[in-house]
Image (cartoon, rainbow, N blue to C red; front, side, top):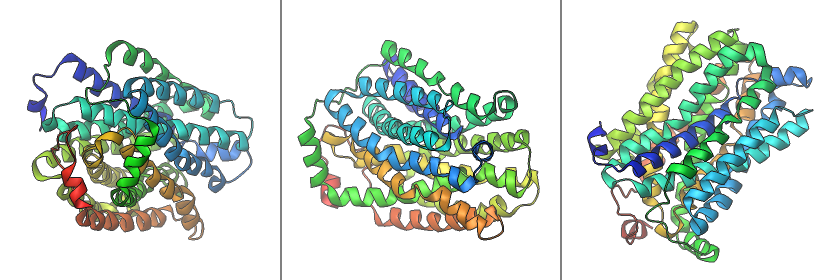
Length: 409
């Protein structure tokens, strides 16, 4: 839809988009390898799935630390070198997770991994949005955010094809592959043209001066993170436990719904360039309510796959607008920190999602469908309301005074 806007790009701009997309894709790939093997880890360590979901909680809970640390580093020392360090960091920790001798060690490693994961999105998104033409932000926002379901898609394939041969430990060891991306970034990706070195004290003062906007962004990202994790993290477990599907069937359904997620992110992100960021987010969130019954309560593999496909079109459709929306709202002097930090603070609050849904299911006879539906339906309404109450700065020129945001505060 916005492909015409990509004509005339320099090779460096294309490399920036490719590197940021791959960085988020491979980060998500490493994260989602975990959601497929919860039951297997529980069996090996003689515990239940609810205990193992603490690994997901800790990963999400420590992401704000990474967003803040890597964001400040990006504002001071540049987006490019910070992104390289971050990718190498999360790849090494993912590999080490495959050697965890017990659940405690695994939980510690996943908490550390969360720090690395938390740093990638904000740094990559700011580098991308500052490097591309303003009229391409909608399409590229959707493309960049589609890296998340693309990573899930790749994890689905690895699980479906390799799990029976390499087990859950081998799944984590495969996660070292993203380290190779550092070589590509070092060779082909330039620094952001909008980046100016910022002292840490200046970054903090900028964040303090925009505290109202920050609170709003955190609330919005809390709802968004419940939306994504509430529809993704325990869906494989729902298919395994409640419907008794095999790893091959679960992997195939996951591939199908992640194709929907990729389509949704790019499609709705592109639409936001024409119709506005807030309007498209609201439409996508409301549409998710219409497909929720099929997604959570269908009884056959075919209809569950159809429901999951449509659900992820809407969920990631709303998410496809977020990279552009948050970066356009962000103060110039803290763009390396603000989008990623507010996003990951929302993740911190939403980190209770997996244990919460597992507990709801457990108290209702392992009815994961009910748990999934309660969370997804509630936060879809919350996203629509919060977005309607907010503001947007579509097309704002980076590097100029952020008058629209200041006025909105």
